[in-house]
Image 1 (spheres, rainbow, N blue to C red):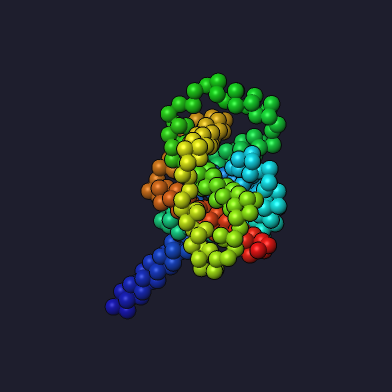
Image 2 (cartoon, rainbow, N blue to C red):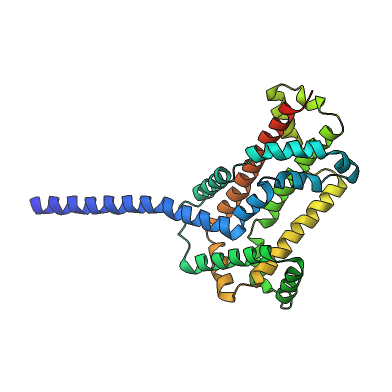
Length: 286
């Protein structure tokens, strides 16, 4: 009897230890998946390019009509200064990774084949970013010489690059709308608002998003260019790498992770926009 009880206790202890190890491994696997997904989608490089010091003002300037751009110098400088303090890349990317990891709980950690393919894609993307215009044109021409095939186009359809580009485009429109009003001398409609009302006004501007035909057309072009360029990068990967990535992006957690990636990225960008706009308006001469 004593021997039986001892064996039952040892079995229970072993089961408890196994469960604790499994529970400890699950968050680590989710974090590995999240980190790999951020690199796969190019989120760190995207965020730095769009929201690093100087980038926010450049993005807003690109959305201004020539007449507004000609008078927006002071407003763009103010936006540039405010944005340098409003966007924290480390905190934003950590928040996005945490949201993706929460959505990926229960998924297996990426295999060495997946990690290798992600690293290769990241290198292709970085190398392309370092090229001059002539080298980029030559790279695109070489990659487009062979049709991408259904495997690569199917993988592209599982990526969030077009949706992430839409977030960046919406951010540019929001910033350009505020800059335009400041440049035209219409700042009073914002600077006189109480804090809570100002928050609501900014949220309304963000939610309004793409409204004009011109903006919708520009967004369509921006999303499609993002997809086509990503397809060029995917064409530089080998067939085995594409197969590994497709299987990884087709598993049970993939859809939830993708939605969490887009949602959390949008939330971080919108929060940075709000901080920057509030700083600009509160410092703007009344």
